[in-house]
Amino acid sequence: MKTIHTRPIDVNPDRWLGAVEGYYGPPLPDEERLALVEWLGAHGFNAFAYAPKDDPYHRQRWREPYPPERRARLAELVRAGEAAGVAVALVVSPGLDWKEGDEDPLAAKLASFAEDGATVLGVAFDDVPPGGADLGAAHAAGVAAAVARLGTGVRWVTCPTDYATDRATDYLRAFAAGLPDGVDVMWTGPSIVSPAVDGALASRLAKDLGRPLLFAENYPVNDGPMSGVLHLGPYRGRAPDLPASTTGVFFNIMSLPRASRVALAAGVRFWRDPGVDPESAWRDVLAEFPGIERLARASRSWIADPAPDPEVAALVRAALEGDPTRLTAFVDADPRAGLDPLLAAEVTPWLDQWDAEALAMRFALLLLGAEPAQHTELSFVVAEAWARARHSRLQLFGIRWAYYPVTERRGGRTAPRPDALVTGSNLTDVLCAEALARAAAE
Image (cartoon, rainbow, N blue to C red; front, side):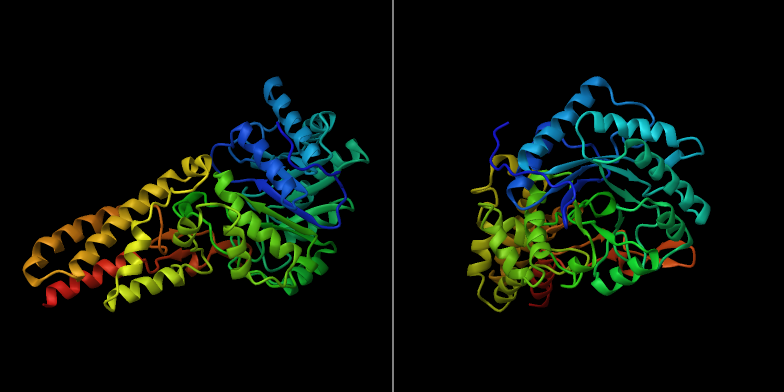
């Protein structure tokens, strides 16, 4: 692999600036993961965590050693990180069936990673059945046993079961109390996907637990029922005091590693300079990815801002007011033009959805400019094209429907918030509905 950027690894950085492969779905192809680590090193990141939920040896069959060929590929990943100045954290997720006596197999599994050169190791207890103080103490004991066995020379990160909370639960208090010093504890904010997070909350929770928190950013990840949304928009919803109130950040990527780079590039700018304007930073980032701007504008929606891009929305308003020229030019342009072929292949489903949305918009514009004698025929054409666009779960030009894991603590449990469900405004819907309504009224 050709190395673009080489710098020494600091396994005890003052600030973590990392990405994590932690989504649900097939793990990345090995070559794509290597390319991502190389890209991270060239763009200001210092860490990458390997923690794909659907790698069976990471989670489902965590006690079993990796087969020799997979172990060799992980060792290659660690070496690639060293070449790029990126510390590769290898993570085990044992919580699905954790029981007394599992400390030894956990330590053995992690020791094999250290033997292969990993200097950052992790233990993740996220997304498993919850519990109270006893479970928190048991999970902490597992981490402590591994730390004791491996000794010095390793940096540790861990994710507790109660990782999305605005308060110190009994589980978290016991978990934090049982961990050795120097183990970084991941936290996603008050929710699994947190629309907004500030440093005051992070500082208060860290004080209650007696240790600082490492922000686990569930963005741009888009697995589960939010998988139709391609997160290519500005990095928003994080207060400027958050970085100073944590030990850094790990961004959970999408299963689309090249598309994820847009959000990663925008996010790392904030974490290196919290005073940056999100919109300006995003525009600068788009310039680094030839051909991406049109698709990114169509895909800027997120839970905290599900509305369509304001500039594209202005084109629709102008068309409805009698000037369709700029909207026609926008939707007629090929969103594939200028895109890196590997990136284009990765986002092909959304490019195909652009075609469906654009076709419905074009027919709606024809209907808006047609003579009354043409209204009946064109109305049926618009309705058919619009229906085809709406049938896809892929979201462009504003979120029609998506369900995000936006949660809150209620008593001793994590519960969904009402705003987890997004049913927002879509520009194709706005244009087609208005064109049909005007035709029916004439």
